[in-house]
Image (tube, rainbow, N blue to C red):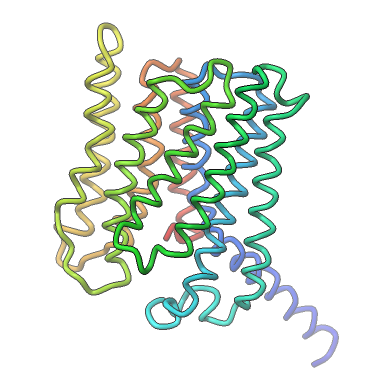
Length: 310
């Protein structure tokens, strides 16, 4: 191979390596992580923009770490059922994925810890700073437990739901007001939505019958929204609930009501719908915040065109 051929091979391999890294991290779902942070942040009264950005950085690294370690733990399963994943396809070694996943996890935990110390913690009292660090540690532990046992544990969707619950709690703990009853209820209904989504996702790689009962959990955010939104906020709550319900049914149609079942496409749609769930949790947010959630939703759909969400 001459110099020109070598350069051509490098030009081809670099984008391929980048795509492998992006696929491992399932980065198309990062807008849903940011929307979780934004919802928890708004419910906690907000705070300095720089602090919110650090929160998003911490959450992003923790999420990507979880996805890398997920593939590292699942390498043998993927060799049998998902040959297209980066490790069984030979695009990257299992050892490299382990190393990168643990690095991203450490970076995410370090960024979370920074939220608890000066100068990043000046807006909150020392006690709540420790709470933020505690939720960061719990989230890191939950990610590791989920990745390690999710293929063998029938209740693994609950573990995934706990991760999203802890993410919203982490975001709320970092804001001006801190964790409130509403932020906890918001985290609970998000967890319920994730339970329904995750049980449906389990059927993407396995030839088992897809049942309807997980869909009940997807309705939890709408139920809470109709309970808590009263007075002038009720109309917004109904409007955003309608948007979410329409989107959920559109996604479910791919798995339940078409000739060729497309569970992966259904799950991708429900994953993007996490942003709409977050928007529903802050239905009284000002117009600029609504536009920001809309942008995150569009970004999630756009990213899915380039990097698989599942």
